[in-house]
Length: 116
Picture (cartoon, rainbow, N blue to C red):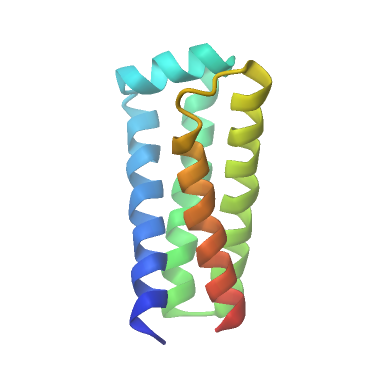
């Protein structure tokens, strides 16, 4: 296991868990952004649970079965593809870099998990 692989995977897990916590609170910026892109406030706990499951699965994939990490990374990639699409459909482009960055981290983690 290389240091880069561990660093990227843990970074992805930490930032994904952090944004999930912001969803659960819910933070003001989360409420404003979700309203702007048309995501109902009632969806936030479920979306947060998906993100937390993905983050936990990444960590579990580091410690245990590789397939679990691959499944978690795949789920996060799909989740953040959906987030990017949601932003594009709503034409909310000024903050597209945020879901795009989460998508890039998740995709990098998936690529490294598969290559491991």
